Image 1 (cartoon, rainbow, N blue to C red):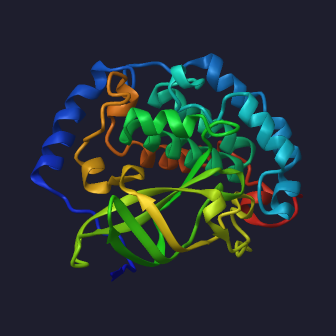
Image 2: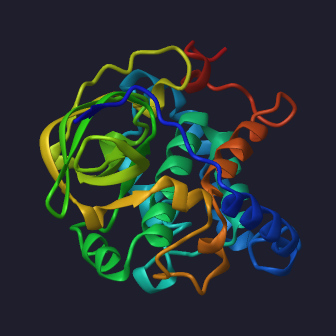
Length: 295
C-alpha cells in the first residue's frame, strides 16, 4: 500500500530520443506546423462566440457549463476534436484542435478550458488504450465523455490480482467532471510489496466517483473544477496506462496510424494555446474568467 501526494514523471533516454525524433518529423505530418487548420471546424466554434459571451454571467453563476449549452457544443462536435472518425468524432489535426479551442476561449474562457480538457481526455483514451477498451468505453450511453485530473491530494493504492485497488483517493481541479461519464485519475503504480514502480492514469466510471462540489472561485469559476474522492475501488489493469510510456511516445497501437495519436503528450499544448487566445488584444475578459459582472 502506498500513499501518494505528488506525481513525478520519470524521464528516460528513450523518452528524450523519441521527442528529438518527432520534433524533426512533425512538419511532415498532418498534425505538424505545415498543416493548415480546417476552417470548417474552427467556424463551428467561432459561430458560438456571441452566444458564449452573452451567457458568460450565467456560466459564472452556475459554476459550470449549462446543460443545454454543453449539449449544443457536443452536437457541434466540439468535444470530438480528438475522437477518431471511426468512433463518430472529427479527428482533427493538432492545429485545427488548438485553433478551435482558442475560438471557444474567445467566447468564454471557462468553456474553452473544459473543451480542451475533455478533448485531451479523449486523446488519452484513443492514443493510450487497446482497441477492446476503446470499443467498450465508446459504447457508453451518450458516447465517451472523459475528464482528467493529475492533481492527487491523496492516493492510497495497492496491487491486486489483475489490477489495482484505490483504497482511498482524493484529487483536485477535475475540470469538466460534471459533464463526464469517465474520469482519468492519476495514481501511483505499485508492485506486490507496495513499492512504486511507475505512475499511471486510471479510467474510472463517474458512478464510482463522489464529486465534492468544492469549486467556488473567482477566476475560471465556470469550469466546475471540483475535487473528487474514490474509496475501496478495484480498477482493472486494462483500464490503467503508464505515464512513463506516455512520455516515451508508446501507444497501444489502437489508433497509431493517425498522426494525431502519435504526438507524445500533445494535450498539454492545447491548454497553452487556450491561454494564448486571451491575450488582451484578442479576448475581452468575460465574467466567467475574472469573476465580476460585465461592464
